[in-house]
Image 1 (cartoon, rainbow, N blue to C red):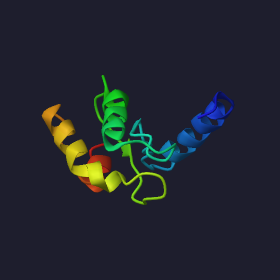
Image 2 (cartoon, rainbow, N blue to C red):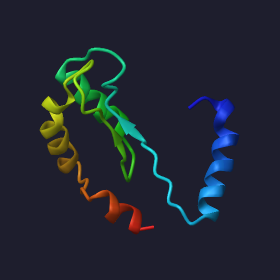
Image 3 (tube, helix red, strand yellow):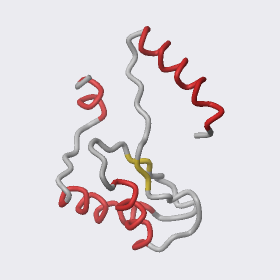
Image 4 (cartoon, rainbow, N blue to C red):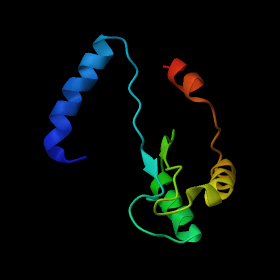
Amino acid sequence: MSHIYSNEKKKALKVLTDLDYVYVDWNCLNRDSEKKYSNSELLNNLRKSSKNKGTLIILMHDTADINKTYNILKDSIDYLKKEGYEFCNFYDFVNHF
């Protein structure tokens, strides 16, 4: 996000918090919407983006406009599990807060 919007985002997050909403944004991605990558490059992008992070909210796209991310979904999940990550559904995640 551009730094020019950071103050606006802070204001919006305060409003959401005051309304008792939970805000969730992605903090990890495989860059599948940026340009054409090989499957190994997509997986490597995920590895780099997830490095040294605790909880991950991963942005991946389910269309084949640029990349066929669904072809590396199993490998992505296997990698993350090997790294010790656990998977939960969205509602379990937001109800944790």
